Length: 338
Image (cartoon, rainbow, N blue to C red; front, side, top):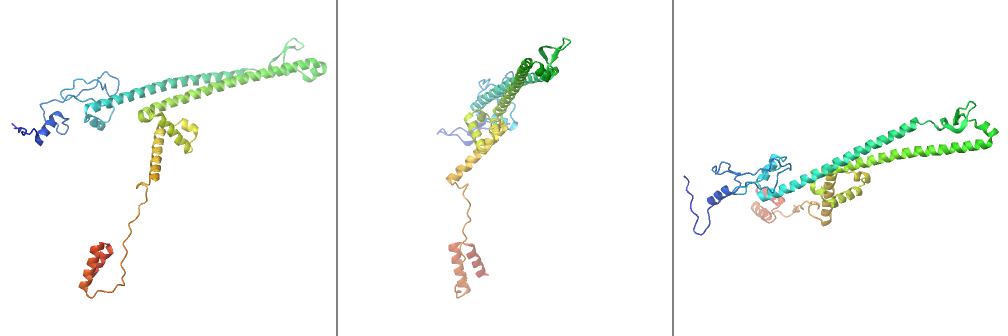
């Protein structure tokens, strides 16, 4: 049986005692076999709770050290390991933010589904209106085939506009010819108005369908942005700044209005990068300053008077190298010694 030494009288504890206390009260992740007589209590999330990551307010049976909360089930094993090593208070904060994010994503996706259903209904209505207008125009007889009001042939049958002999009518009854022409032009005008009204109704229905489809796309991309970049999704001012950044770089306004979640994230990175480089250029930070090569020490003239003896030359070369520590003086010293 191991005997643990008592703490000194001053109240300090030894390193071994401190390690032992940490092993009992801490996470004990480094030595799973240590303190096998004690049981770590891990509080799992409520299995009936549909929210990802469980309820951070539900502490459960925490045990003596407060236990730990379960990481969100869709996290990777590596991230779960980091989460398990955090204090319980940090775990609860993370799970609270995670639940808020999941709720926001769920609301965005539900809104996108509603708008998408409205877009589908609007598209169907537009198709019905357009088909009805085309069918009416195709089935309606031409104006020349319509019966002339109050005009019959020799057998008492109604006559169409195409059967009117305009030249003969002008010669025999100019007043009747004038009345018939006025009626014909009035019918042509009303028919044109009806056709234009049908075409405008079909066009308006198509425009409404396109608007609903665009709104559905925007809502869908908003839900994706909630998933991919919650901070950017909750910052309308930052998204507006990104839009201005894209416009300043020549992006078409229609494309900016329809920018997707992935494009928004990439545009934010590009904008941040440009701003960072612009800031470095203005402040003249070392990161943007050109690197200059160190100046080489000048080579001593070779026309100097030769020393009186090899020993004196070696001493002189050694003194020069000791003072300058340059490469040229080192080479000169080696040459003299050799």
